[in-house]
Every structure is written in C-alpha cells, then in structure tokens.
Image (cartoon, rainbow, N blue to C red; front, side, top):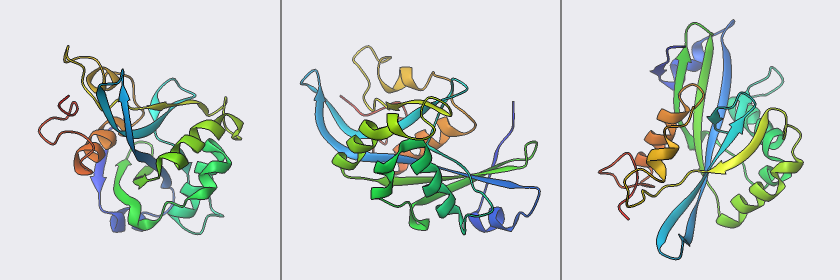
Length: 191
C-alpha cells in the first residue's frame, strides 16, 4: 500500500518531471431534505464508485495541454460528470490540500466546491451520459452525513468502504473543516 504525505501547494508545484499531478474535487450542496421525514440530510456530498471498485472523488490527471491544475480538474470533471459540470468552475480558491506518494511519483491535489442543490442534482442526472461513465466511473454516490441511532448506520458504515489513496482522510477532514458534520465527532452529526 502506498504511503502518502501532505505538503504545501508551492512545494507540490515545484516538483518537476517525472512527477505527475492529479486533481480531485468534493462537490457538495446544502440539502434541506429529511430521511424518512425526520433525519436531516443537511448537505449532499458526491463521491464516485471507480473502475477499481473503490470510492473516490471525481477528477484525474492533469495533462500537458492543461494550462494549470484547475484547467485539468475542470476538464476531468466534464469527462467524468458530463455537461452539467460545465455550469460551474472549480478555482484555486477551492483548493484544500496536496499529498504525495513517493513510490508512484504522484501528487494528488484536493479541492472542495459548494454548489446549489439544483446544480448537484443536475450533475447526478446527467452523469450517465458522461464520456467516462461505465468505464472509469461506475456511478455516483451521496455520502450519508448522519449517524443512525444504532451508532453504526450512516456515515460510520460508509467510512468502512474501500477508498482510493487519501480519499477517506480528505473526506473526513473536509466534512469537519467545512462544518458539514458535528465538530465533536468525525463519524457524523448528532441526530
């Protein structure tokens, strides 16, 4: 299993060949809905089931024709999520962190982007028509941000899935830092 370490964006950008850069984004939106009419959903957070059976965030490798990390990320979002992803743009202001895997010579950059719920629902609806759907991306999934009364169902159970690279840690850190879950718990909000 590859080991990852965090580094500053300036350090990551200074790494030249043979290092490759990959960018991924957590897309989320406020969601006023309730599960079973009583459990507040609070936010819709998207992840995807990847071709390798692991969960991750949409995105991918930055190519030489991309003028910057964000151009590569937005290109990848359109390829994986379809035309609805062209209704918004992930910018440098949405950047959160970078991790490196020395063994693979890959730098993984992570972004978060808040959308309107209608935009997120449009992404979900149009994703099956995306270029990479059924190939690199097997489908989208919403992260359950609640914890059921049994203390297991919801986010705690979701976090037991298999994630690619640092996706689990990126998810947990983003949920906490953005206040999408109860700050006293990494397993979800009080319900």
